[in-house]
Length: 142
Image (cartoon, rainbow, N blue to C red):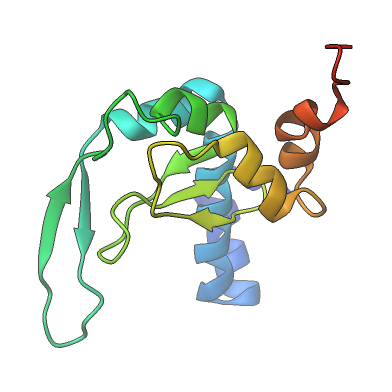
C-alpha cells in the first residue's frame, strides 16, 4: 500500500489511529533504504541518539565507530542489507531494510553476509537471495 501526500496520511490517521501513521512513516524510511547507496550513506552521517530514560532527556551525537579494516564495514554491511541505526545501548546497531532484524556488537572478523544468513536465512528474502549466495557455490567455485 502506497500513500502519497499529506491528505493520504491524514485519512489513514483518522481511520486507523496515530500508531498506523507512525508505522507508515517508518515504512517509507525502510523503503528509502532499499538502495545500496542509501544504506552506505547511513553510515557516513553522524546521528543523534537519546537515552531511553523517561526522566532524563540526555542525547549525544555519534559516528560509525569501527575502522574500515573490519570485515563489517559500511560497504559490506550495506551490501548485506543493513543500514546504521544506533541506539544509546548499541552504538554499532544495524537494521536489515527488509526483515528489520537488528544486529550489534560487531567484531573485526564478523562477516555480515554469513551472520545475516545464519540469523534470518529462513525468513528474510534478502538474506536468502544475497547473503545465501555462498551457500549455493560448490567447493570448486561453481
